Length: 632
Ligand code: ADP
Ligand code: MG
Ligand code: ZN
Image (cartoon, rainbow, N blue to C red; front, side, top):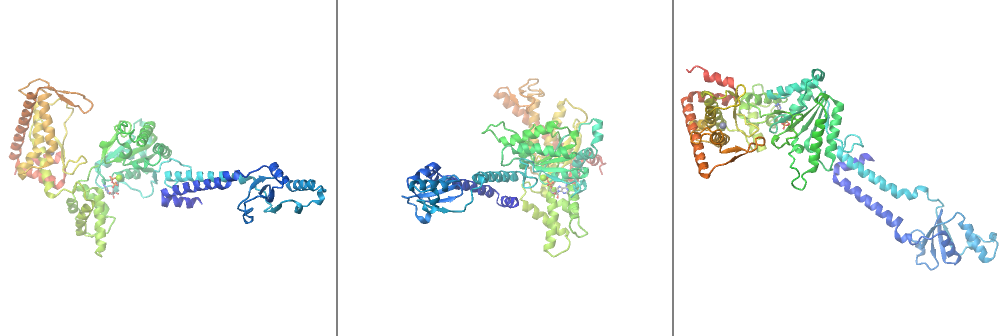
């Protein structure tokens, strides 16, 4: 009744184990007390002993069951009613000729020929009971029961390990779910927005579709791709889409599933997962939430650390080293905490490619809303752009939920299609429902962030010696920044001139400057800018010898160029105070310069900030076009 055992285990969890264990203990202890217990062993006698007792007239009654015999003595304390079923004085194994022997003994005693002594003349009563002899396997029963119970235990443990699917003998096999590429196919079309992410993953798809071309070319294909981004941005969806596009099997397993009850299982699961994957190649192995096993190893400082997790991680690293990308297995992993990953995982040859999956911008949000709105009934005149604008900062998962909530709301109100109002209403429901930590930006905040970023970009563009603006965005980033302005140097750039540093400091202060000019108040949004500006100004004085006052005197030395570049200050307290004062004055001066630039270009600042507010992400080109547009 394996099925029933399984059902028991599945529904009751730990209860199954406890029940079986109890049963085992009970059975064994019962066998020992009633079968071979010490009190009974005391009553065992040998056949010759029995004959002696008969000879001496000590036996009153015996009960024979095949070759075994129990009996009571003439001086017994055993009640007749109890004999022979419940109690007796002795027990023995008798020979087949017991009756004849007893008759011979009686005949000798009475001095009669054997023929004249019948069973009735014997000095004790014989009770025949079930003339069956005990079968040979009788003594093996307790052993057999214990063995069976052990087997059941073992089997239950195995089921727990395999999640109850698959064959019985797969102790420690991975629980990866495998998706048939032709069922519930997800493609890139299902992933709205995320154009950059899709672009990055297209190469993988191409490789999986046609590995031979790549192998023949001798190209090395990355083994591992790490999808990094906040929850709900579609990392899992993207991984599935890669498999769907390529039409290959897709193994998916969550990092936390590796690390489970039984020590050593995690590692063997990893081994098994890779074995299965290689058999099915080309295919994709997707490890979701890889941070569960991929956390930095702490060298076992406290109580040896989590050995199980480390072993699992080590096994993963070994497996990744052990196969070539050209085997046709590509490993995708997703995490929303890339900083917590062990550096060994992100080393070249392992997860050497990172694909940041960011929150969607305005266009992306609109596209996602449209994808999900297709699955429900909507009124024809819905303004998705409007909804997308209202839901700035929402993730793909939240947008999907907004659409679903709208549909639910329509049903509640007995309508057959979701309306614009349903959508707008459900934005709040979804956001409030989640109690999102970094809730959606208010319009006011969005506007402040727009001005802040344009401030940076404008000051950078209007000074000579600054790197061109590449991209400006006010979509909150994974890093926690509310927006950012990306500048990219043209060509290689190893040396920075003093002017460049000075201008960079001005650019850094410009975000805050814009806030102050436009809103007359300042926010906490500039903390990172302030930190960077201060560091730069300080380094000018202490490391680059760029201040008139100190000239070329190194007051700070870089201690370890590889590990973070910690610096140590080597100068007197007065000098330090003087350095601090100089830093303040440098930053202040640049702040004033930035204020000047932005006040002079207020019209452009307003125009660009409005444009960014609308679009949320703009390219350097768009930015320059507006900036260079002839003034009206
Ligand atoms: P993650 O793995 O990053 O936490 P998921 O991939 O599980 O996020 O996304 C959850 C759900 O959100 C998806 O099933 C999908 O319905 C929706 N979603 C997220 N991003 C997108 C997107 N770019 N396009 C369409 N739907 C998306
Ligand atoms: Mg996910
Ligand atoms: Zn800034």
